[in-house]
Image 1: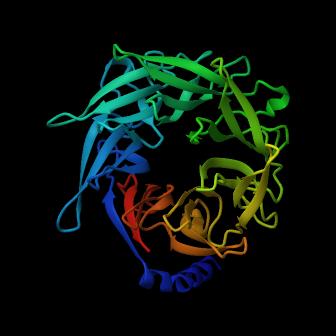
Image 2: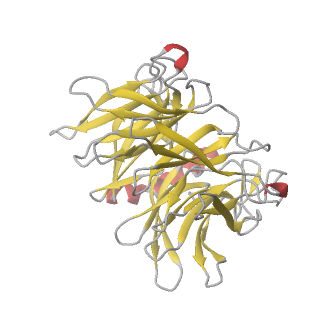
Length: 411
């Protein structure tokens, strides 16, 4: 039966292969080369940068890498930095979020481990004329009131960095939102903006994901919790953090997921040009579908702000493992189409999809690529560059001595 289903899937998507080109740009060979690549970022010259969660100086350490395009269509990979280069890994290990650039071409990111206190770091990588880049730890988390296990960071217009930690903070130890401010002597000052699970039952969220900024300086993101059970851990919330004149920040919950047709376990969010928020949930939605013990195979949602300050959720698409399931995140193209990746589908290998607005509130789904173990398995959220889409897979299916791939998809 499994062979028959797989054959049907291959026939169903054979037309996709003819219309679109999927190409592997680089295969990681394992420990020293890097293992489990994450989300990608481009520079202005068209080079790709990213992290590997593991590999480098050890099995569970991690690296920062660069892929440079060659004139013959191939790509050359170089390791910019291998973590745990300093005693006791005070430079960090396990970078597991997307990198960002400043205007001078330096890279910034976070590690979920290592640092002076072993609870993670925020770091800066500066290019050298030749060879590996120079790393500077901007902040080492202490694992207490300041937080532990940071997610990625973002810049505001003034050059401050913002981010979240998955744990630490207040007495509940359920995560923080933080700010890093650059000082004139090159150091950075850390401040906690909000401690999650400050309200009864963690109705304000717990374990926040990475955040985004709007033009007014407000932060938005997703978190677990939210009072609703979802196996006693909460089904998740979308939150907003707004700065006050005195330097404090106020959190408001824009939507609390119930685990039903509105979704459960949200990922990060993005804005459209009109100020609406879009995101995904890993479960909930179509309750006739189940995956990994949870009801529903996830959905894509839109949150619309109302005049009274509340937000209304619209479900744009509920998935039923068809072959998209458990979507991981989204991005917009210049035409207003949504692109994303899913973790389910045939053999749970993942897929890439596109959603196009029809003009009547409905969105049409197009499956761009289905991963069937080879090549690649478990895609990241893709990024766009010059009309092409690029991403990584953390696994390679049945391929031996492969620690993930970087791929290009031409629609």
